[in-house]
Image (cartoon, rainbow, N blue to C red; front, side, top):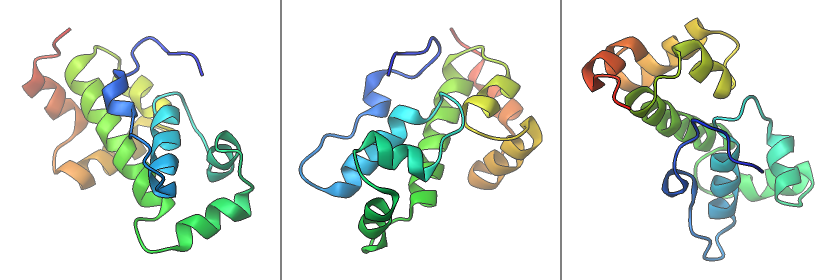
Length: 126
């Protein structure tokens, strides 16, 4: 995948692989986050797995695909709001939300603050 301007630095995307399938899955999710909507099937394809094989790996103890995706989305949102001047609507789209309101509700639920509040506090640096 090619880098997209306004995409976070590699250290926010990379989980070092040490043989743990969940780390590989997390790495694949982080590579996709910020580039628009994606599905569990897309991640399976990125890893060279069938959808069923990916589900089997995820059925083991640990966070769900949804939880892993939500964590990666939040990391990207925090980075983008604090370090870029991307419009909130653009950040929402890059994270796969259908609209800015859905993103704002999810962000507020995760952080207790609206995206615009974090941006004001960060000073919109960069």
